[in-house]
Image (cartoon, rainbow, N blue to C red; front, side, top):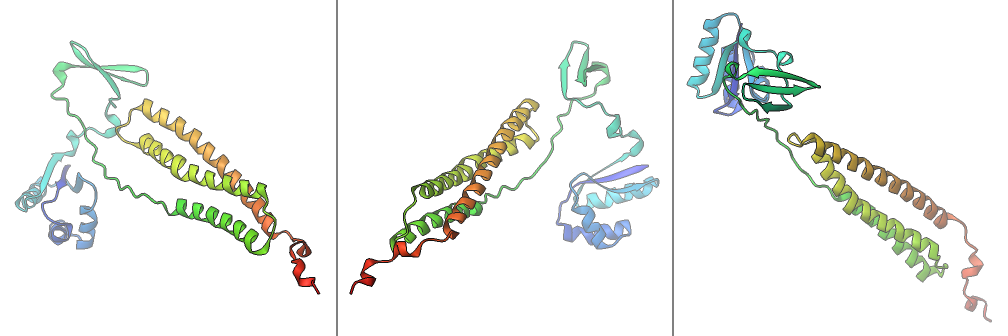
Length: 247
């Protein structure tokens, strides 16, 4: 069986889809879905070699990068030897995997080709949640001060300390823990990161994640205490001005 694979397009998907659809006998929509797959894209598998050669000729005439090969000459991925660790001996290329070693004589090797994985990533930094958390803490402190100024309600030092603590925890979580955890997460799942670095990043991330969860529990407890404080009944006579009863 012959396989024709598209490596790169010389034009847009919208321009090529109708032409490829006519070549393969499918709809332009199906051809568009096929062309949007990451390369290499197998676009034809056939026992008819003449058809495969004809398709390759048409695609190359449209300046696309395309290859064709016999499927029987391609080694399946599960039959390949994964190269994770290796050494170069005088007479062989030695691959170490899962505690075993496989030696390949240099006479059996045509070339050593470094594989490159093309990846694309999009980094979007979101600070709305951090701003919202700090804003809520600031509003709570302002509410406590305004209540003291306009109603004469006693200023509880413990409640002020509680709100200041929640404010500090918000700053610590939003501007220290979260950026560091994000950095460790990227390092942990990066393609080119070594296993040792990934393991170290995983341990550090677990510690910071546990710390963040503990701080979240403290914040929840502090919010519940503050909610109880602002909703508990207050003796109104305690804040009544004496001038109201002066004759």
